[in-house]
Amino acid sequence: MWQHAVLSLAALALPGAVAQLASAVQGQSGEMYYKPGATTYKVFSGVNCGSMEPFRGGCNCNSRLKGVHVAIVGGCQPEDRLYPADQATLTQKGATVRPYDTVHCALFYEGDVNIKSYIPLIKRTGFGTTSTDATPRQIRYTLGHSLYAPPNGHFYEHFDIDVLQQYFGWAFDESWHEAQYFCAHPDQDTMGLVGYLVTITSAEEEAWTRNYING
Image (cartoon, rainbow, N blue to C red; front, side, top):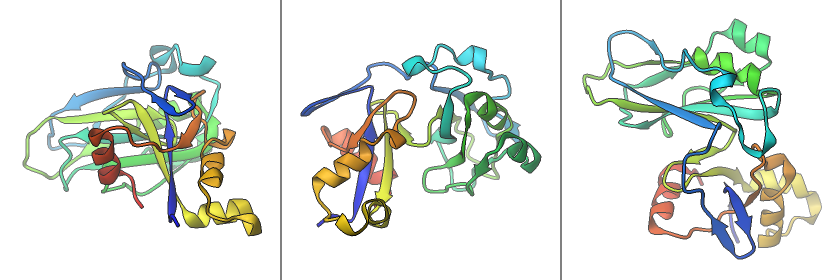
């Protein structure tokens, strides 16, 4: 009996295999290094749709997403924070934001809106810290609601068993097939990437999922 499902999104999913993308996800993420200072710094103030294109899966700036996130993926310290766009911009763009996630050093924006609407939120996301550690921080934005894993270029999302019970109702029997069906449902797709129940294929992937995926 399992207690959760973990969705994995890869560049390509083949029966019985996990295909990995060798290079960075084109048009789907970008990153910068920032050396901490005394003021809040807008990390991606220069980003725009034109600089992101072409997107994966035939998507464009008008394609809709369920979310995007900005994360400190290198050098994150306990005192570090990512500050969200102002409430007026969030309301105007039809999105919401979760509280800063100290486990993943990430800020998640959510809403069924297009990529163009998410851009101002990414641009207005700020970084600040009271840490005296001067190590440069590696900060990445990612288009998509699932967590991006740099080791293999895949995306992951954890679902508690309560979510699956609600989805399947009385017919839910906690089988592998149900978990796989849920993860592969079009609702979980991200920019043309089709999901599947996670398959751990390396020690590096296992270490990453243990560190970053709840459950």
